[in-house]
Image 1 (cartoon, rainbow, N blue to C red):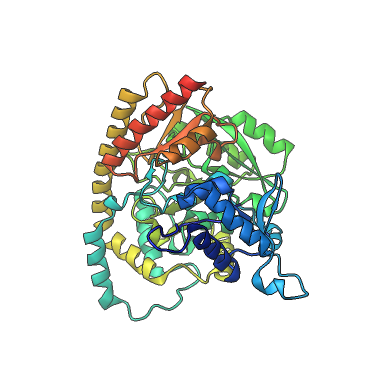
Image 2 (cartoon, one colour):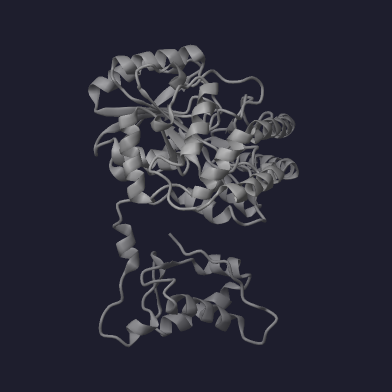
Amino acid sequence: MFVQINWKPDKTVAIPLYLQIKHYIQTKIEDGEWTVGTKIPSQRKLAELFDVNRSTVVLAFDELIADGLLEAKSGKGTKVKNNLWSLFSSTHPTDWNSIVRKGIYQPNLPTIQDIHKVEPLPQFIRLGTGEPSPELFPQEMMTEILHRLSSKIQSLGYEEEKGLLPLREQLSIYLKSIGIQASPSSILVVSGALQALQLISLGLLKRGSNIFLERPSYLSSLNVFQSAAIGLQSISVDSEGFDIQYIKQQKKRQDASLLYTNPTFHNPTGYVMPLESREKLLQVCEDIQLPIVEDDVYRELWLDTPPPVPIKALDKNGTVLYLGSISKSLSPGLRIGWVVGPEPVIDRLADIKMQTDYGASSLSQWAVAEFLSSGFYDLHLEQMRNSLRIRRDLTLKVLEEKFTGIAEWKKPAGGFYIWLRLPSTISIRELFDTALKEGILLNPGNLYDPNSLHHLRLSYSYASKEQLQTGLNRLAEIIRKLLNKS
């Protein structure tokens, strides 16, 4: 993994450019930001980043190598060799890069790391980002909510281990509206559905066990379970849902601990599991004693008709752990989600959460509780659905005009995503890199399934309508150029 650079030499000053570059790299090393063993981007890449000739970078490198700070090896690139202190010391500096590689938590996939680095940069059009646009944030409502809270909150200390009771009471009321009977004691407030998955991996599963999940799946883009030495067993899903017989067979052959599903406006495909398929899946999982984790964070984002009831609403035996969140429907920055399940499970997960962060933000919990109790949440959802519907329809219109003949897709009934299939001659990595150079950030399909080498997860939720139009037009041009080249 290379360092991240957001700096350029100043061409208006008298100091030679190569000396500015040398000083920049030297300072990074001196300050301990680039430790011994850190990889430095290639001379060609740095010349591009710094907007200088490659010869300028070569001069800077030559001096840093002569000073003993960098070393270059053929075929292995350039690394930090020493810091200034180690040049005058008989001891070797701490090799933090080696220590980092020994950590038990696996790093993100390289493409995901690239995405995370680029996402904050305003010059990129984000066509794959899975979060609501800043334009969809209910600023006036949030201002009113925070104003109300100023007279209600007496302190902002730690909340009880399962979360703020008024919030869990409001969640209990909300869950009842979608068919789930859950008392506040069977609800755990978490910092988003991702933390819920982390708690499950730590508290309910043993090393070496397996999880069944859809193919493709958002879970495949994470290292939550793999870092805990838990395997992922992908199962194909068609219009009728999971292959039930396959689940039965695989359960007998291996130590499967649970089944993870995102049945409503699935990430990344937008698929909605039919009610009958939900009933069959629950029945077979009850028969073979296979717990279900139902990730339902997109439920409220229906654009045509409301989706079938959650699998949890059909559950009378405590088979399903239900995950919800306001990250997609209201604001990811509030960091509020919830887990619903049998009380012994919730107690176990709550205990682990207290050991890791001592509870979600108290202010955020009060804000979400007030959103739910005030009726603002329902009003916001109605407005958000209208906005998302316009964005989806605009995206579909551009796809019809520009992508017919070079891609395939289906109209999503809700959520954020369109699962775009490209011709097999297109290299998804080449497309990602080319689009990035053109100022477009994509989410390749192989993040969600290693075998999805010709898909993109298109999102209509984040980019503005103008950016959607511009970005998709530009993407179509890139794809056609790559097709002509192949």
